[in-house]
Image 1 (tube, rainbow, N blue to C red):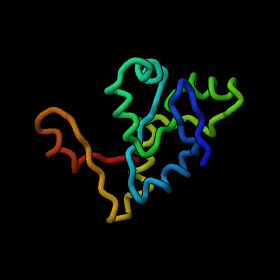
Image 2: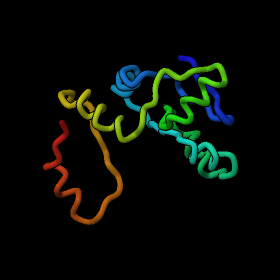
Image 3: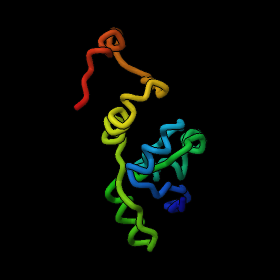
Image 4: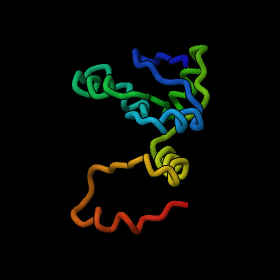
Length: 118
């Protein structure tokens, strides 16, 4: 699949459905926005973290417009906050898919089994 380069960052040109299908076999997803693109220009450690991603998808309407302006339009904006519930719903009946969440206040993990998504 074609990638779109914006400020030296290759962004995968997927629709959300295409990305969800690819994630059935795993991967690490980063969702670059304008702040990330600027930080990536000067922060070597941040860039190394981004370099480890399997997929990088657009998380910014401004980045979406920039890609179109540059003549390499992206299929759609896929924000992380939209991707997670979509991924959960896409894979909720697939017992081979495991979701790992990192970071929260003490006791939140114990409440995790009570979280419901539409």
